[in-house]
Image 1 (cartoon, rainbow, N blue to C red):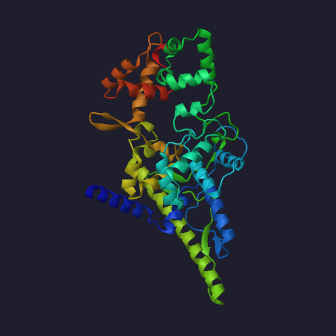
Image 2: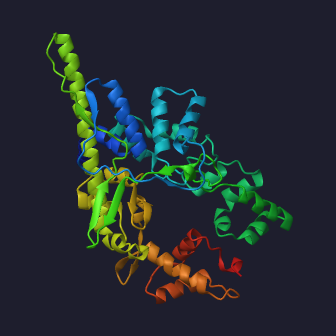
Image 3: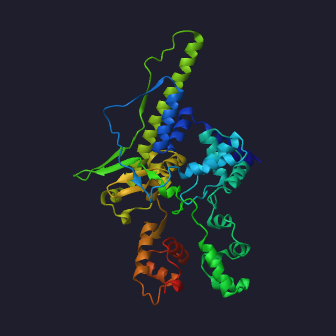
Length: 429
């Protein structure tokens, strides 16, 4: 009993510590999650609401505004996020439910999946948005999101994604009862287990081809993520002496200051009004400053951890790196690092990269961490060089990789092979 009470007290204390964030910290966390365009809109809105905030454009300092970079064909200006949030109007939702649903939309990964546990999302809503929501409420709003277009959006894994796209009953049976055979492309086993004809199997395979395993990244979608304009949040350059230089792209976001006319003389009511808006304005300015400091600290840590890449541009020089590594370097909260790295881009002499591209898991090589990119690069080289009349099985690939010093399991080889887009050996002939 004493142990249970102690555990409860510890959990309560931990939760209280997590929730004791200042208004400035909460506001800074929200601003950090915004893109450059979203930040500019937020600053403009704050200036409209607060008569004692004014813009200023300083002559000094670095305010980089590089060219934007297009991904894919130019389409409509409606963003993927806007397209999803617009669909909320089709449902009878309370303001509380809309806030939860909007946060879920913002939590989608590039594939359109929700990969965070619902309990974690509920915690983040309370910590960063002062919004109390139970795990059950988040689950109900996720069910609403999963009814949105494109079909499959908001799934928590590939299986759920495909089932949300309303396949035929026969294909649904394949997913629900023969998932391992399906992911292993063992259609012969599926055919035997379901007593299907060759024609029926071929029909199922054609139906699968019409499903979208990545509803958040559909290249045929004219208003999807592939058409969004990317503005890098950071610029990393190298001078003639080989020194790396980092600058924060401010874009069109203006600097702010309190109006010099903001005094609190006059009636008590008038003075109270002025003080309220002055405090609010200063809070917003301080939060913007904190945003810049946080983002710069995270980017500097990434550069330090991945310095060989930033100097050479060779992705094989990338070392295994986790969010925890950056959090340790910066002293920032893990969720803060996640917010910065999940939606920001950096311009380098070698191209523009999302910050999350610099993170990877690791395997082991003689007891040392090895980036999965290196393993995949070695695997790709083996497949490309194989005898096309006698392709290497996953077991053979596993053996060959181990001979190169990559001690990984056959299942891992199969997973990496699929991620690289290579079918099993029997389909590579």
